[in-house]
Length: 114
Length: 116
Image 1 (cartoon, rainbow over the protein chains, first blue to last red):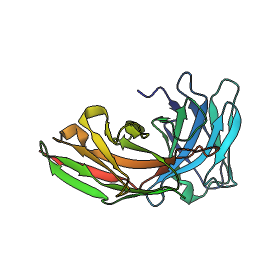
Image 2: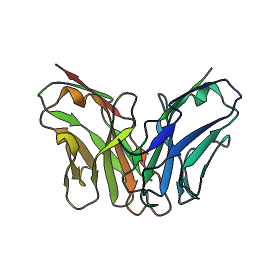
Image 3: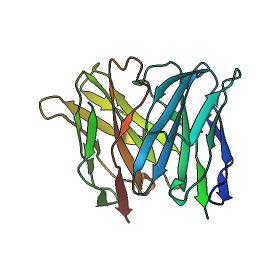
């Protein structure tokens, strides 16, 4: 058990809709990272927050946004959903802000767009 | 810019035989290198990490990896495969002086199958 909790585990919705994925980091970790895993693109970094502030940005679409709250949990918002957004979305956490630290992953949210 | 290449998309071994998963990296600076494992329907779990303290890194579950700067390689090995090792393995690189970049660069993964 990594200590990182993601909800929900599965999400099924339709094109054009909006969803929110939630992540609670491991106790004591201040950084939260979001990743998208799909068959064609592999595992791609989306965005990192550290102690409530955006720290680094990867291949995140403008339709997607995230935030980290004072209690350190994070939410990833996906809007105007398209079929291609179907993927496994992972959250990871680490103690500090640097990217060369080990990251602890949650079990993911599987998003299916119909 | 840093990148990582996993040379095999699929490796199949028999239980009790050695495992070799190959990884080459490219990095502008002294890299931090990781191997992660992903079992079906689960998140990624850290196997081991290299940060220049020693070129041979021992990880969990009997896995180890050797950093070879001259070959820009970080291959993962295990002397004897177990059925429970069947999973997907990711080689990951991050620049040591990551600065404001919090992202890791993942290889495309190697799926390990273990035959009884």
